[in-house]
Structure formats: C-alpha cells, structure tokens
Length: 81
Image (cartoon, rainbow, N blue to C red):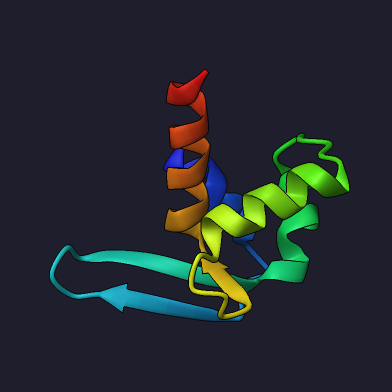
C-alpha cells in the first residue's frame, strides 16, 4: 500500500526527505495537491472528504503533508470502519 501511495506522489512532490535512522525516503506535497493525488489513487473524494483528510495528514497546519502521513491516515480510516 505504501508503494502505491508513494507512486501517486511521483511528479507532484515538492521535496524528498531521507530518514537516515530507518533508511526510508518520504516525499512531501502541498495540501492543494491532495485532490490530484487521490484522483491518481482512483479516489473521487468530495470537498468535505478532502478537508477531513487534510486535517488528518497536516495536523500541524504547515500546508504540506508526506506520503507516509497519507498512508497512515488511510490505514487508520480502514481500521476504523
């Protein structure tokens, strides 16, 4: 699942962050890119659903989110159902 989410970020990410302790890479995107990323994941979300998702992935209100935070938000939603 995480690979699919990271692939959806391809071409949209504004920055790539390397986390040395885990050896993983993460991409950052702006909140305004979330709709396009979700469309690439075949998710046709309403504006209300997008706003909810933004509140989950950008809790610090920095205007951007990571591929990891998006994957974690999707995982939390899945297990909440």
